[in-house]
Amino acid sequence: MKRYVFAAAMTAICLGLFCGFPPWNDQAQAASAEKFTVLNPMGTPPPIELKPMAPRLDAIEGKTIYIVNDGYPGSNILCAEMQKGFSEQFPDTTFVYKDKRGGMGGRDQALWDEMAEKADAMIIPLGH
Amino acid sequence: MRVQYIQGPVWAKTGEQLRKSVVYGKNPLTGKAVAEEIVDKLTRPLAPEDTKTGQIERDMGPPAYTGTAAELQQLFLEKRYTDFMPVILPTKELVDEMLKATSHDPDEQLGRMNPGSGAGETWTYTVKTAAINAVMAGAKPEYFPVILALGSSGQTAVNVSDNGFAAGAVINGDIRDEIGLNYEEGAVGPYAHANTAIGRAWNLLSINGGNCGKVGTTYMGTVGNAQNALALIMAENEEKSPFQPLSVRRGFRKGENVVTLFTGWGLLSAKNWKANVWQTVMDYPKIAKDIYEQQSPDLFGTLLVLSPPIANFIADDGYDTMDKFTEYVTGASAQPKPKGKAGGFGMGGGNFHVVVTGGSNNNYWMAGGMVPTRSINIDEWR
Image (cartoon, rainbow over all chains, first blue to last red; front, side):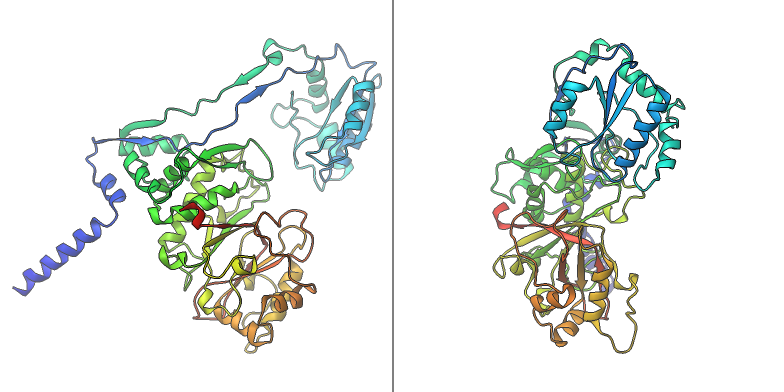
């Protein structure tokens, strides 16, 4: 008799535990063919704004190209080396090195105005 | 914009190294000279698609999917909706049950999130998005106000940083016991349902609501960070701490339910530093000061996670308030205690914060470079 009582008690405990977490059990015990409908968990990205690229140069010879350092560590060294090295490789092009104020995210309006007036193109290293 | 890829990193290289690898080097993806590719990008005529204007709306898939449990688990895995582990499938019934734990409208915008440090796109998500992700994480509805408070911050649990930032949160107030947060033995470990499910929900909301944690685009940790597997959710052991709770030190009243978010490098045993934590007689305040002085003070500063025995040793040594302890460790008075956004980049030196949690079975504790970013009242999200 004691054995049956024990078995009954264990069964009741197991059933209680099994029913304690319905989300796990419903899905775990579902017949393999049973279908669920579940919700998409994604947030909403911003729309992509398309902006036309600036017109390209017909050639770089005879042009002035600004190389702009945005201030990330090492970018100043890279930009200086690009200015020197590209001048060696493309002697008919003028490469100008400039430091941008305002860090990586800031806008340096004075530099932008200067480039609008004097530069034919610009190269700016991004990332790190 | 045409983008030229070069061999990184740039930082810490000499001019000669950069000259060789970039200026006269090759694109590691194409094998072509960098200089020639740049000229091509400057001179190649624009294609019609280069001159388009307007907006492209994003297709985020249907609002719901139907399939067997196995099919849906596979679908969620393939669509990278998960942390690579099986989830509780978010049926409408389970999500509705979760939403009953808040008075907020399911369609209310809960937050805006980008992968960190302003990098990448900023996505938006609703209370319902948070509920879906909370279900997926295995959270119980009673945890949901904490998850909403975390989501409302807009802070990602999975930062894009190539330095591999971790995220954490400290919970104060009566809600600790109400929802069964562990703040005794193993408090910083993963083996407590409330702590673990809340941390996972924050992770999943970051992945799905904020488009974070995608290796190669929005998760760029050079070696990654193991603590990104689960956001660190700690509840303070206020009852056994000799100090005012963290939330009180940040301007809230005692007992108020508050979550304080942290970001930084993560936590390690105090033994990780040069401190000898196994001597017979210990000078814990001095060890804390030594650890603080080894940390970079101007980024994340230092967070100590003290077990109650260590906290009480420190108090017994005469530093029975956080102001006294902070002044001793940093040589300056305690930091301001803002409720809102504060700390983090550019905060300057002197960043020093303490949390007391865990059991009392031995004299162990943790430390790391982590800084509080903001504290949020949880009850506002009920």
